[in-house]
Length: 401
Length: 49
Image (cartoon, rainbow over all chains, first blue to last red; front, side, top):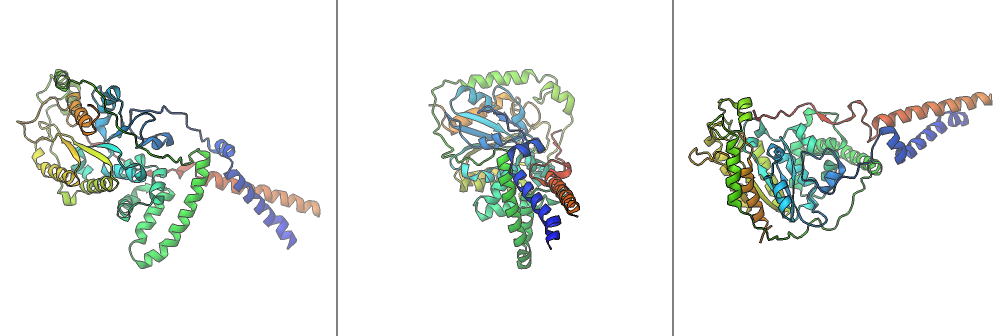
């Protein structure tokens, strides 16, 4: 027995103790895994396409600046056009209240919903402007956020927040159900995703519940250990911040909106000389060349994106977010059957009205009412349209006296 | 005889420690080894055009 203890149990105990000490040693972990302490980021960014899985960016999400309030502008590809008129440049330059833009192509309703749910405690009174692109609600995009985009925007930290937050059951159930739809497409899912999957399976019936609940409990225990280790190494101890909001300060700035719109419209059209559709020359010759397209319409009852939008609105309302919305147009000359998408757009508008959210609806399906120069291509706003959005934000959030 | 035991003890310590460290290196929360990173097999294709 002594021999057994000396030759086997003692070495095993020694190795386990060593690993325990190693796992909690920041220097050793940094050496082994090359974990770099994040370099200090500028306190302020105007636009990021995603968080790049950087804790510093995630920590800034939905928080005001040190000295002023910040409006969050969430959307997809239209935000990548970094022009003078886009709100995160125009408003940030002219007003004390700042605008931060976040998102690129694919950042649709469910992706935004999850990001907000993970930061639910920051939602109260948070000024958020969401740009709804009609492109999300037609063709393949109507199936909702893709699994790849979901992972891009929703880090394991965000998913852990959702698991640990005391959110309403309806919201977490929707999250679990939606994520479970992605399960087949994940390779090597992390612990948080596994917990979501097991929770979905557990909800099927009592037998599944009995089987999966202990597994969920064990995974949560593992997750806590994992967080303890990674928080120390990545210096990601949750920081308690009292009050995420600041008062919106009203400035006294004279802005001649009409003049800005006239000048920017002329500038946009001056770049659209090789076509009658108001599309920038280079874009038209590279991607359009007179070829028309059709929107592929799904009824709202079969449109997953529309269901995600309804849940997003519910989440914002329940948490008293100070949200507003922009509905974007499509180029009416390129998309020849826009009227087919109008019922969906009307349903979106009705939902926004039901929740009492302000909305700048730029949707046009009548060629007589369509203004050339609103878009630089087939779906992205020009500065002319961005100034309209700027004015909407300034008026909605009372940035100017 | 004692020397043999001590040698085997030290050998076992080294072997166990190596196994434990390898497992920790592969499965630590910080590990980016191989397929340790969650990813999606379905790629998002931006369909603007």
